[in-house]
Image (cartoon, rainbow, N blue to C red; front, side, top):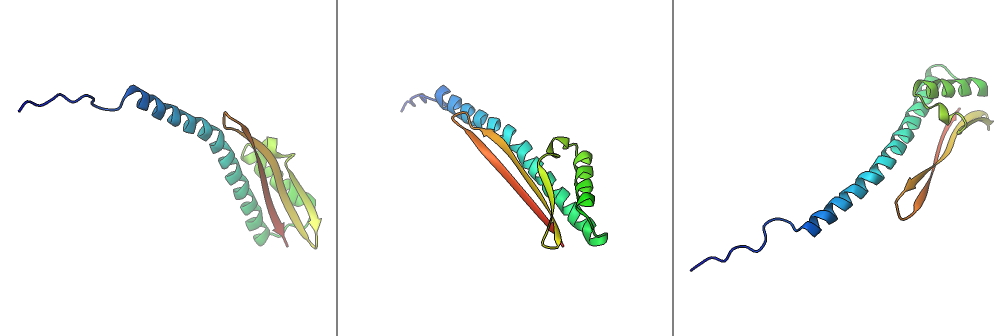
Length: 122
């Protein structure tokens, strides 16, 4: 019996192109999303640092809390976030809130991303 040669070996050009397009889209979205995720984790870390510092050396005033947050923002080279946080005296404690917006371009639409982080110091 003679063997017929295989008609195709490997993926076709169209399948390869579709896979490359999907991979490119994932990389495009990931390039935008990863800095936002890193920024969010950095703010979480800064708030944890303020909370831990408050446990060892209590923060007594709004101004002191604000200066600690600004100092941590400068250390982390996030000076653009200084307008994105507020420090308030509330119910006998100090509340630090971060509120900021970012955009995630998905090509077919731009998705607004709102971030809120809160730390209450008693």
